[in-house]
Image 1 (cartoon, one colour):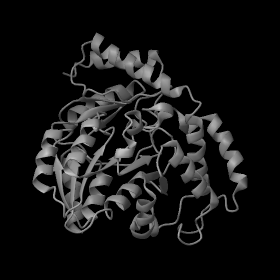
Image 2 (cartoon, one colour):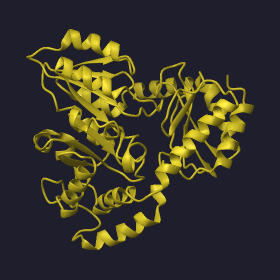
Image 3 (tube, rainbow, N blue to C red):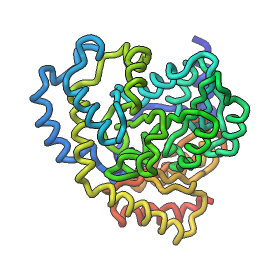
Image 4 (cartoon, one colour):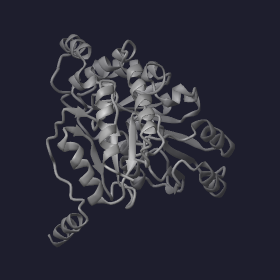
Length: 375
């Protein structure tokens, strides 16, 4: 088809054509496995204890509404809800499925969704399927959000504010406490994606919402397990009524085969291990050490972040790809983020810090960045 050729040629012309690669670097600054749970031996052992209890350990055999609602699902959902101080949890096959399924159905025709302009693609896709009217506010700009609230808030419309607790490309966070105050003032609801906060912030990695003590003020939280838990899948945390609504109207939950029991066991084991691991503390040590070294070497261009995601803006697809290749040639795993994933002129090297990174590895990366004359 002509449009396929044209679109691929356009991407290639902008040096932004994607392809699948198998990557392995001696030093990992690119994976989302922030606290090393994907290779955690305690989790492996616990999975082996959980799986023999399942009648169908290899597959759920159907959707949750047909044959796939195995005991491990409801047991794990109860565990997750208790861990997050939530009324109920509902498992989804992925963070993408959870966001699309939730945001596409949660408000009705004529209602209003106000979302951060840097919201993840899965949130945007869910909103685009919704019957509500949607408007974006400037990234983490609550003054801009309030202008929209003044314009759209009314007693006869539901207004849903959407944001993330840690943004995947910048690693920064909104002022959630002020956001809660604004929502109360204008009678709006709040839904947040905690994908990059789970396993990183809060007691036992419970997330930023609980760390700030505002969980009772949040209408719904989406927690994702492919980052800090080193697993796969996601869950929506909300009231019993909201979860019942999703079971009846969330299409990405209803019309799909449920996750395998192995995936659910991995999630359960991950949550159990969060409560004993020392990796979260080590991660925060590494984050602070990294930021100290950045300041020491006076490397400019980093977006302020206290999270595991540290991004340095290097404008231009060709330039940022070239710098990433220099680092990769030294077996340092850092990947470039290109336009159109981020706006043109905001291309960046996205550095993911982990609990298992050593100070020596961080020093090697900092030394390379300092020598590349990025600014």
